[in-house]
Image (cartoon, rainbow, N blue to C red; front, side, top):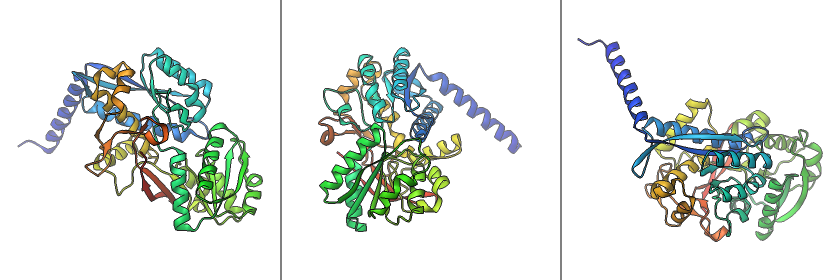
Amino acid sequence: MISRRALIGAASALALFAGAHAASAADANLKIGFVGVTSGPAAAWGTSNVRSMQTLADWYNELGGVKIGDKTYTIEIVTFDDQKDPKRAVEGMEKMAQEGIHYVVGPNVDDGAAAVRPVAEKNGIIYFPYAFPKELYTAPASNAVLGMIANYQSGPAIYKYLMDNKGVKKVAFVAANESDPLSQRDSGVAAAKALGLEVVADKDTYQNDTRDFTPVLTPIVALKPDLLVLSGVAPANAPLLIRAARELGYEGLISTETAQDAKVIEEGAGELANGFISVGGASTPEIASDHMKEFVDRYTKKFGEYNDESNTKVYALDYILETIKANPAAIDNVEEFKKTIDSFEAANPYLKDPNAKLKYVGSTSFGQKRQVAVPMVVNEYKDGKFETLFVGTVD
C-alpha cells in the first residue's frame, strides 16, 4: 500500500514537472514596462500598478505563458520609479525605448504623462497613464490610453450623488500647489458650479510636503461647507488633511476624486476618517468574479497586503495583452494596436456579469477611444476599510 507521504511527494514532483514543462513551452519573452511613482507621498498609486502587473505576470507564466498568434510568450515586467518627477519619467520612458519595449503602464500624474509623450510618439510606444489632461487622449495625440476614470468624469457623479442623498449645497476645494491637483481642482470647481452648488472656497493651496494642515484648513472650516473636496490629494496627505479638518471641528463631508489606500488612512486618521469618500478600485464584492477573487488572493499572498486601487490597476496589462492577441501584428507595431482599438472587445474576467466586456471608451470625453472601460466605483471609508457607495460607468 502506498503511503500518504509518498502520494504527496509524487504529486509535488508532478506539479514541479508540469511547471517546468509550462515554462519551457514559451517561445519568446515579452517585456511590458512601467514608468511611475513608487516612492514618496504618492507611492501607493504606482506601487499598486507594479504589484498588479507582477501578480498577473507570475500567474500567466505559471500557466505556461501567453499565446499570441502562433507563439507563446513569457511576460516580463520592467519597472522604473520616476519619483513623481517629470524629468525622471522621461528618463524612464527612454529606458523603455532602449530596451525595445512598445507598451508601458504609467506615469501616474499629469505632468509626468505629458512629459513622456514626445518620447512615446517618437519611439512607437503606447502608454497607459493614470493622469487626466484631455490633450493626452484627444487628437492629434494617439499613443496614450487613460487607465482609469478621470476626475472630470467621477467628480460630477460624486457631487450629484451627495446633493441628492446628503443634501450638499455648499462646497469648498483645497489642493496641493502642483499642476495635477490644481488642474483637478479647477475641473471640480467647474463641475460643482454647473450642478448649481455654491463654491465657497476655490483658491486655497498647500505645499505637498506640508505636515501641519491646521493653518491651511482653519479659514476653510470657518466657512462651514457641506463638502470639503481634497483635489488630487496624494495618499500620504489625505489622512493628515482629514485629521486636521476634524480636529478643527469640521463636521461636513470630505471627498476626493483620486484613489486612496485604506491602510494609510487608518494609520494616519483612524476613525476620524469614517465617511471619507473617494474613487475606488473598479470592483466590489458584489460584482467581482471568482477570477478577480483569485487575483486578490494571489496579490495578497505575494505582497502581504492588498490595495483596493489594484481593482482598477489590474486592467492595464490585460488590455495590452488582449488587444495584441486580437491583432498579433501589434506586438512590435503600435500602429497596428491603434487600428484594433475601435473594434476591440473581449470578455472581462474580473466581473461576475457574463456580458461584461473589455473595450475601449472615451469618445464622449476625448472624441476618440483612448480610455479603458472599467466600472466607476465610489467608496466610503469606514473603520479601516472601504465600502461601496455607488457604481457608475463612462462611455
